[in-house]
Amino acid sequence: MAQRITRGMLQNAVDAYVRTLQAHDLLDGGLQYTEGTPSMGIPWSIRYVGMGDSPIGVDYGVLGHTAREAFDRLHTIIRTLNDIKLRSESV
Image (cartoon, rainbow, N blue to C red; front, side):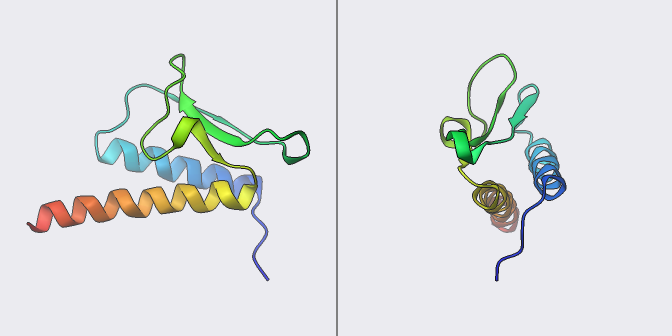
């Protein structure tokens, strides 16, 4: 059975995502994270503050329609960005 994703776990994932963007010098301004409401069809999302643009790896700012989707997507983006950096350093 899959582990339940808590608000704290999601916030930690968002924080790790922000740190990863900063480490790769990909963060242009602040980010706004919004919790989703599945019963109302509102997805978890993340966007640049005041711009409405989506940060790296997030289409239209949408992370997912469930906490699990948002959590998994953030960790996939973090792993991918770190893999790209490691590969470029070894070349």
